[in-house]
Image 1 (spheres, rainbow, N blue to C red):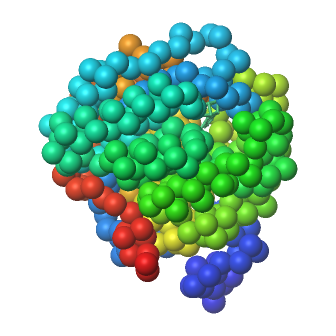
Image 2 (tube, rainbow, N blue to C red; image 1 turned 180 degrees about the vertical axis):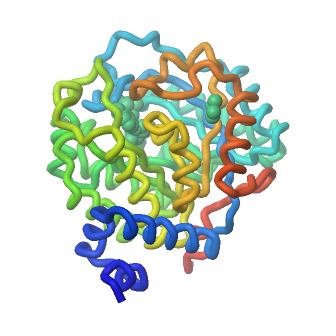
Length: 360
Ligand code: 5AD
Ligand code: SF4
Ligand code: FES
């Protein structure tokens, strides 16, 4: 047996195996992708679940060095969607059988914000007879807030660790308490304890990041026993401090290829979790999301944010779907998913099987 065959047969990958897979090229790279495709079909099926994405607000109290909507960037007009706008987006999702939405925003922890999310969750639940599942992606919050939102009807939470290496984390964020690695890790633990299906993820191809870091990220996901993952290439943004390192980055194509490999390897490692085909992948390759679906991803997030806000929610440059209304993204994604040979799980929540099958 060749080395790649031997690795792909293993029940548990070591760090060396992960490095070998991340470095794979040509035929070996294709064997990795083929294996991931088989695992996806066998363990989660060739079905893709929609999560309608509502980019609720671009106010953010943080200053992550990579992100376009960081507090320190004054280029964007700050907005907050109205309740009516949110409920209209939810209604669109409901009528189109999306079954699931994601509410995402910059990090805000003031009382008014917390209360508005709680009230929106209750109204969403009422308006859709509990048929729409809500995922939150609202950053680090206190245990009490996470509990309040859970009790108001949210069941999944996405909080990317961004990078699992604490010293790399320090290079990508200001060195202060609101950007503390351990606090973020603790927030992930609290989410798990509260009962959420927990999703995390990383950016790929960041300045100072090595393949060894990426292998450790994969080990981190396994160790933390995550239910869902969202990963994508890092894409530079001119209004951020990390832009100064743009000439030291891997070429976009390599960042994209590494992202595909991360998705494929994670699918093989954690067979029944949900993995997103992220928008950032399409920023680099026009068929990026389909390619991710073909190597193991099973979740896609059609954008439901009103078009007038989209140009102000640019975490990175060249983000796609800036002018496309919900309806256009829907037909666009339907075509893409069919091209990838999958079907869409309309009307299904598509909960993480990993979460449902976890022993009590
Ligand atoms: N490139 C790619 N992804 C980014 N994010 C933030 N900034 C960038 C960037 N420049 C990601 C982070 C965050 C998610 C919402 O968007 O991982 O968790
Ligand atoms: Fe705020 Fe999130 Fe951007 Fe950091 S990555 S600046 S927390 S929106
Ligand atoms: Fe929005 Fe293709 S997904 S236009």
